[in-house]
Image (cartoon, rainbow, N blue to C red; front, side, top):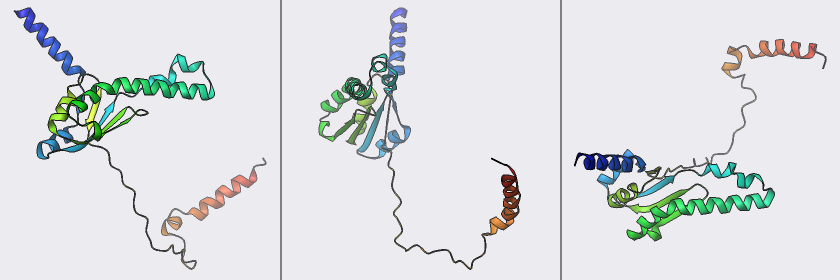
Length: 175
């Protein structure tokens, strides 16, 4: 009986170590909200770029082989997640990216995220990173007033004096 309990504990620990990570921020938000968009970041496939298979190829052949290797490996690594998403009826809310080994899911609930997190492997589930572009100003550019003196910092660090010394050193050397 002790042997069985020990084996069960070891198996449980091994499974837990192989499972991915869910961002604590995402967990907290899912407790308070119905559903959120999520991103699943899978293990990068950078080993393909140094593959011996690619080292013997050149040009377009190398590019095509690299793309096919990436697509094949990405498809294989994403399949367990796609299976879970299909079981939850979310196949239409999924966007996969083969070049980055990444899956984006719209409107994922806590149950779905829990099931995805149970998939064995090294991955991270989190909210998508959203970046925004600063809106350009519509004000016209105004040229600097030519009657304005040097900026305060230029005078303060004695820029003119430093340039005079540097200029003398530069022009004394014969190149």
